[in-house]
Length: 413
Length: 185
Image (cartoon, rainbow over all chains, first blue to last red; front, top):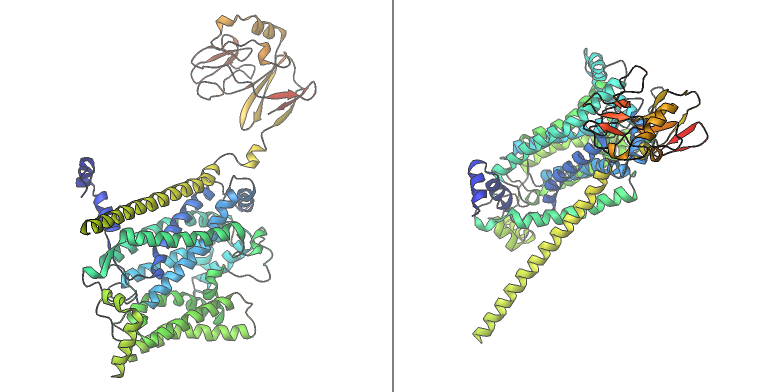
């Protein structure tokens, strides 16, 4: 508690300083977190960057089919620094997904979804879904060819629903095709959803605080020698990571701002002509590949939805008590195969749906679902994990590598 | 010997403290400078954009105007009053003594051609548009303009004569490209 009388007076009535000292500065973190743990706070920072840059863009944007494209071009050419703000927002969206995907794969590898962090994990999946909806609607706003046809294709996914599908699509559009009502509501929702994301992020953090961060060896904090305070140790480490990230971000924004975009979106939307090869933004490509791999309209849509939904079930599909894949020889291999599988799906999603691309797409889609629904449950039953270190503190002193080596010896014996 | 060791420890302790302080200060300073320089493009984006600035001039043809008539032109989104003054109005404007004016200015200093008075039609009090452009508008006691919001009265040179407005109606930058072609801005 601070000595300052005014601070004490306020804190007695509104415990903000107390909250900062207890939950942000002195908050105990496992002392063995590696750099993969930087991506959570990094995602939060990128969210703030996106909301701020989006706010300033919205001051110049016009949500009308006759003016949207030109208002974006006016942001690029006329508005002071408008090009910078738009490129920050555009590339920020891409990097947001990079950061969040790394954050998710970190959780997969180190078993961060396991008890008692199931809800923390599920809230994270909700954030991913909200991010996808927000990113999709944001991509529609410049009203280029890719915006228009992306909106048409994605909204048409709902027409796969039996009986009521076509009515739902008309309702989504507010008309009989993607048009001005669609653009207007997408702008409203694109403005709203980031704040919903902030709310779910706060829940995500509340859920995190109860049991604290998971860590690379995946065992709980047992005593004082296992943790260090968040400040200054992890504030400094997060800041260093932010510095590296900012360099990558600035590199994209200033030297190759359109690297991750599609040139067709600089052609104004034309409802009478579809571009010959339409693709979603890169961060949707793995899911797009899954959609196209199923030779049935409803089946494809269901498969794409299930690809995310299966993540909600993961805490119960993986029965193993050991969290970190470091100590799970089979799960570790399966994890890296999944990484490769998702990268392959991403590559195939950007290719035209013909010939070998379709066959590989089906194999990769099959592998994705088998990983979660068969391989992981089986591995969690049959694999013999290495012996876990007795404490976080000892795992650092011995070194994780020696810990595994000694555990392997025990296994032989 | 023990004393010397203690000294070394003290020096080390001091130097790590100052080194840490320096790093903290340097990091904070760089961070603050970085945040401020990143904030500037965002703040500046709210200033008038290039397309707004490009609309800064307006050209008007005054040939159809007859003595005693007035027109209102939009320049940079604001009204500009152009009045083709009669001889009587010009005489009235020139005859006023400077000590009668709250914001002393000669009529000659406010016009380029004495028959055409060009002023920004925004009351210098709180930004309303004064009446007096149309024939049956109230023109106030001095035959110029009358602001309905708070009762400011302007004369035939657009000078404030009575009421809360602090200054005369502003004269915008303008040139006559020919005898009857006016370029404002």
